[in-house]
View: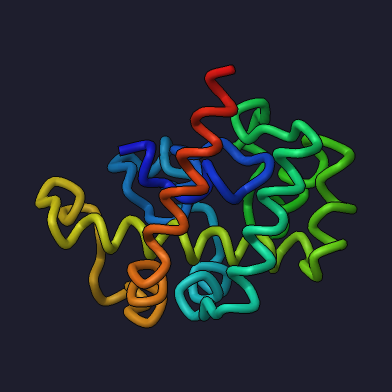
Length: 173
């Protein structure tokens, strides 16, 4: 399933599974679930974020530039005990490597917007996968799924998978 998480391809410095569970609240135990500590306004911001071609093009550009600079998501260490908001998580992402903040700024993102875009793509990927995966569907609250983002993700799935395959090959070297 990890190969389906778009953050592996697009998020320059966050670890894949914890951020995905952070976004979806899939972890069953509140103490083990960092999303439980996130304010409702931040959760609503993730849910209401709308993906579009401009955002996607810029995410792809960040991913390609990060790869060219040797910035790898699996190198990041996220301390969820210090995360109480999206801004806290964005700060950890951008401080994980001093090259990240200038890179995302170059492509027109603030750290928070970059994180929101990635979480929106991740949530859309999870919701899309849940359509055909009953085990995953049990963790997805359909009332909180942004269906426009799911449709956007599904329309771009081939391109996203190609990017993830490139990243997997680069990581294996």
